[in-house]
Length: 355
Image 1: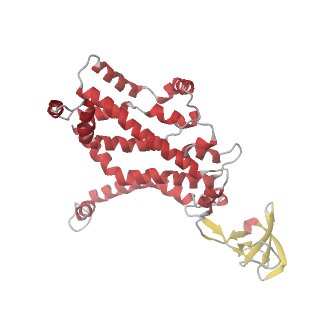
Image 2 (image 1 turned 180 degrees about the vertical axis):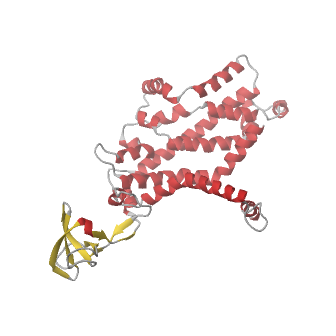
Image 3 (image 1 turned 135 degrees about the vertical axis):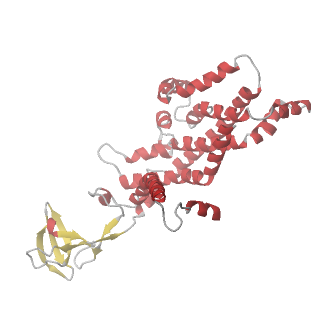
């Protein structure tokens, strides 16, 4: 920790910051702002009300208008400050608005509800305070039409199953392409690499027809099975497994070890760094996948969190408070995975590429 802090605070200047230090820190600050600024804006906006989100120009922090209970009115009334330049006797005072129509509003003194005056809305400034509206998150669990726990369970099931299946299939294919000599191995490898150049949208139609013929439409398996093998995973693991000495496998075969035992007891443990990288990438891919689940799944009970986000957008209006709150909840699991396992991504990719 001390070494990391010393590295981050190291400067070229001996008593004061050198101009290169200012440039370096400015560049880093700009990068941090560009990366985390939109995320911070998203989190803050998820606590805003619909009225606050529709305000122009937008404001960074969420605000709520102050209200006061006034005798003779069932609901609390919003408070405003009358402009000092107003020609009425209410100039500069704090008033409560009883009703509003067009560009004029009827206001009263909170202590004298009988004296009412109609003023242009341009002369009224709302009294506001910073307030984080947590009801946006509470409504996600209280809305009977939006089953958050069901969508979360479907996303976790798809992500976990697809990741385990991908690791198994890709590692077995990489083992065969890296440690077995057979006719056509180079051709198979070139085909695997060639599929990286094909856009995913090109194979959507034939992939959908295959899934439909197999009867997996509106089934979680229809989302899981097509992602069981990926060319990126096969190529990544193959490049790492090539570095494992063949002598270790030959010694195991001399000890009567089966090919399955060699794969399970030797290849997988030695390939743990590359497998960890692929596992983290697979979790992010499957959790954030939107297009393919949207095509395969059409029933509400099998929706994932990513598809459920689309339900807040209607033909005429969008429920932005709920949509933003749902987006934050959707980002939390994958952000936690990346935060705690990011070191494995860097070290695994570096060791794989170096070898």
